[in-house]
Image (tube, rainbow, N blue to C red; front, side, top):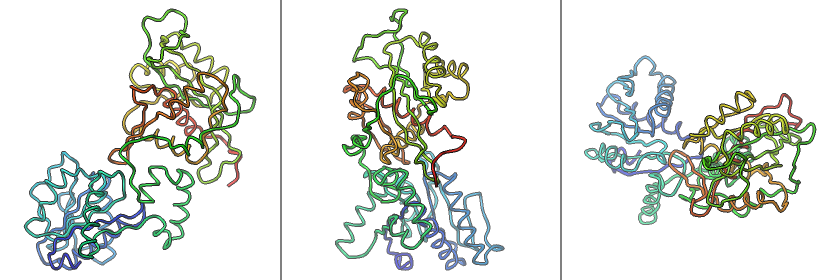
Length: 441
């Protein structure tokens, strides 16, 4: 407020753990400024990565605060993106790269919500100049992501300035600081920590407020240790057990013979089927997540998809009687997924790999590993066992804007068939809902 009143033009960064109150802080600040300057034709500007839903939520929250303050019959909404209290305005603008925002002026305050997801060039070229003639004060709110985000850049600058002049410009409140004031939040954050694991990228960034690196190994040695199980591999199912599967499809070899190929070519992708047993014995509320034990791998290299149909229907439907099967339905996999769904019904879950869906798949995989719920069968001397662990050790993860990730094995180093099949198997496990779980709450 000193910076605003004295037109000092300071830039502040505020990191608060997810659901810790940063939007409420922002709305209270907006309410105060609109009230103090309601008889002056001045603007405050707030931007966010998207208009819907992020700015819509911010506008609704400010309206609630205005109503509580007794301004319900006074403030007005203009153009769908401005809230005006007498002469003062709060202007809400999308920071999407294609949004046309040039021409607006920020007199009182410039706010950047979810700043970790706002494009740095968009901010520098189109938003920051809005306060040039007024030397406007700027506040960037958000949580951490990677070290290259706008919020991290401003944070570094602020900390450097603090060391020089002692003026506090960066404010940080992780989940433990929020939880110290809110018992309900403590319970929720602890459940997320248990579900995701303390070092899961989402818990690390959204709650612990620690950035992830731009790219690197997907699994640490500790995580690979958690993935190792002691149960045996199985050739056939056990009565009374629940099984799910993930099927990753490779390109077919048009030169292959009528029979399914057996020779291994390390340069070619494989079709990999991963089968897992679900155990709800120790599942706990509120998530009731099962233990996922990998029990069998089947693989085919260069196989014509049409030749696999009957084999897959037999394995999934008659032998293992899988309750849910997530099938790679991207590109050439779509006909296979459609055929299996016609033969096996709703237990087949076609999965199309897109940036957002693959990101969710990767985060779910990390969550299952970190929590110790996912276990690979014990060493059995098979090629499948060796290839599985080779891919797990070579797996890499790249973290992108908007809390998204990509995971893969570099093509120069190997394949990711077992990795993707594993992730699809977990997708199937997540989609299966038992009629009555055996675990206690």
